[in-house]
Amino acid sequence: MSQLRVGFIGCGGIAQYHFGHFEKMLEKARIVACCDILEERRLATAERFGAKPYADYKAMLEQERLDALFVCVQPGAHDGMEFLAIEKGIHLFVQKPMTLDLDYARKVNQAIKDKGLISAVGLQCRYVESLPFVKNWLDHQELGTISCYRLGGMPMVWWWRQMKQSGGQAVEQTIHNFDICRYFFGEVEQVQSLRRRGLISGVENYDVDDASSTLILFESGLIGTFTTGCFGNFPGDFNVYANGGGKLEYGLGGAYKISTTNMTIEGKAANDYGQECDETFIDAVLGEVPADEILSPYEDACKSLAFTLAINESMNQGGMPVKAGF
Image (tube, rainbow, N blue to C red):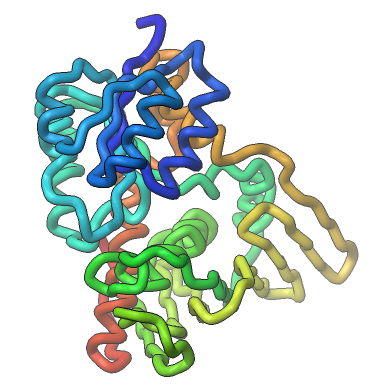
């Protein structure tokens, strides 16, 4: 297979992010078909890549011969497109969060496994080049507690402001941070979370949480807190405290500072981790790298999705403990 034939469902903001990556790997993959409910977006994408535009993804999947499909629709819009692609043996890249329905995600995951397909989810922060170094340091510490935050700002798109479409801040944006929590600290046993509303006003059809704070219990026994909201513009920080005085400060983009009683080590990442996320998936489909080099396959991403949906469920229950397993 010399050049992959790729389709896109959704040509909005996050698709534009992926389009830039595809323009750097034209020798490996070509976008041959695109679908969007907005004519302007699908026609612009078709012109950009010489692709065939579709208003209906069912027609696109029926008529096109695709090797891989990127699904870039809002979380609340997943209505079966993954299953149609899987039936046809199309390898699948799904933008995070993959759905707001965990049962739907379970069924997609099982279908991918049953067909033996390659999958990836757009949790590109897994590909930050400083991550393995930081993880190695953490693995050699006795960790006591963590304190994290992300105040991500409010995306000015209609669907993000509606809980039933986006899932809110914890699910739609901060899933990146919660995913890195799982990478660093292992699986989550339970969460307890409270929300705050009333900070943001004057935004039409807005019903998402302005802020939330979550108490996290990891299966290892580690405990921590995570505060997130959409009323500020701070990408986020991880503060990790180890027995004996060690401390890690880590930013989602890969900058870190490790402090101990004897030394301080600082560093940062310089790689284009979004490009690496997309390109690793394409290389795996081409057979140029093993599939296990994909750092966030669909099954693993389901665990981060379950984590964030449990946070929402705890808030809905007034802060009651909720199990967070997939």
